[in-house]
Amino acid sequence: MIPLTIGTTVDAPERPAVIDGSRFNRHTFWCGQSGSGKTYALGVVLEQLLLQTELPMAVLDPNADFVRVSRTREDAAPDERERFAGFDIRVFHSSTHTEPQLHARYVDLSVRSQAAVGRLDPIADEEEYNALLHLDKSPGQHFDKARFLEALATSDDPARRRLGMRIDNLEILNWPLWSFGGASVVDTIDERPRVTVLDVGGFAHQAEPQAAALCVLEHLWEKRMERQPLLIVLDEAHNFCPPVPRNSVEAQLTEQLIQIAAEGRKFGLWLFLSTQRPTKIHPNVLSQCDNLGLMRMNSPRDLDEIGDVFGFVPPHVLEQSPTFRKGEALFAGAFSDEPQLVRVGRRITVEGGSDLSVEPSTVEAG
Image (cartoon, rainbow, N blue to C red):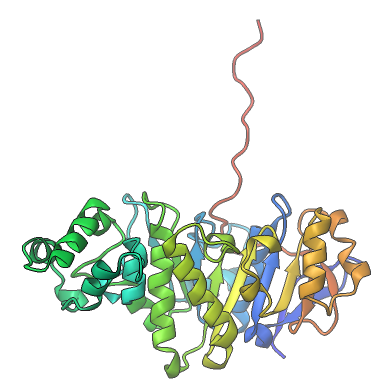
């Protein structure tokens, strides 16, 4: 057992609440409605994993909640400050104003994923899809966007010309995500720093966050036989694997996550999914989770869903969830010998995306 002290027990505040860090070699589901303290508590668990294990993590972060994970709070203990200063933590940003930038290589995507980005169906758009399938693509480090589009536009093959026009019309190659001849974030992840944070919330195009995630997850799956352990943290996971995908990129991404959820454990690819409601996650991903962290949840339907999926939690314990105060959580499953109710402890690092406050008016009433 690797003990992670994540707070105190609700029934006995003097007793530390401990979960087993070694059991994060299972998929984990983290859930709580808005205002329950879900993201703050998630940060507490990730910090403890950093301090007590050697497990590397990649965090897909839509709300910039973890971009400051390398910065300790002013009230952090000196030994905690020293240890965090020594961790290899790398943060990549999607905002054009913040460095380093989050980039990936378009040509590293599989043909199916490139087709998804281009909204191509292999049957309905059979000729263009086939043209994409048989393109001679330069290696990522030598990719030239202008030359690539010109070659398609001047091709003798009408299907290739239509493919080039589609890519150009959708402005796919204008997305800030693509690095073309530069480095990709997957190059960094392959080095397995302790934490790689991908701040995906600043992209302008709706499909870019999912495309970034798809680049990473496809790459990890392609290299799965190397068996290099990695905890893949998906904050606001409903943006990556909803029950009903809203577009072709999301559908391809969901399919990849279903595969990792079903088969990734034996290769050292472990998911940590955080969201507000279980019904917002694809059931084939949710059903593979063995660890549960549940914060306040008022919806009877959502609690019934959790009870069905996580049958090891006694119903009378689940029924207490609507009464949880902010920062209280139920931990159950592989990482806890028995279900325990916990008041989550303090953060060590700075939370990046805490709520904004409503400021009082400075104008006196007349």
